[in-house]
Amino acid sequence: MENRNGLESAFARGLPVLGQPAPERADAARNRLRILDAAARLHAEHGIAGLNMDDVAAAAGVGKGTLYRRFTDKSGLAAALLDERGRQLHERLMYGPAPLGPGAPGLERLTAFVAAYVEHTVRSLDLVLLSETGTPGGRLAKPVYPFWRRHVEVLMEAAGTPDARIRADALLAMLSAEQLRHWTVTESRPLPELTEALGRAALALAAPAAG
Image 1: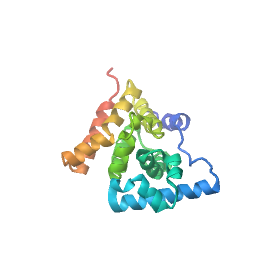
Image 2: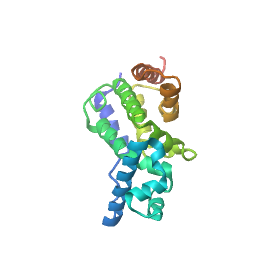
Image 3: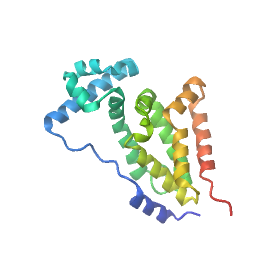
Image 4: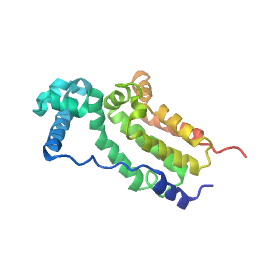
């Protein structure tokens, strides 16, 4: 049986913290906001096709060199658009109400995390897919990935799950944008049923060692 105080202590000690963007010069910060605002508008109007780098630069009123120095490519721009939503989910995990936030048993928090993560990904599926597949290893290279993995790992460790790091990676692979797209778009699985099934799969992965 897990120790609730020990679980919260493990979170306090063991999780990376997602901070705000690094301080910038005022003109650089203004350009960044203009680019992200323009990208968000184009994405809302035209979907992922709206994130043409030339069109984003024109809509933001900045030079293409400024855009490319800042975001490198379309997948980098998609990742930047997702940062704020990722930060919001992080805040809910760390400080929000249970069962997603602190105060609930670890396995209850794990299924709540699965539901919140699926909703977070499916809500911006085309952007997440681009950020995860636009470059080789993109999903694992995302700055937020170590936080998600450690969050799941701590919950599994508290439940007595063996090989918690490997099982955390396995669960997050199952929740990748590519896999969720296959289930929700290609196979047209209803999202509530899929979320419940993934919660059950997470509990199976987190099963403690026998004996």
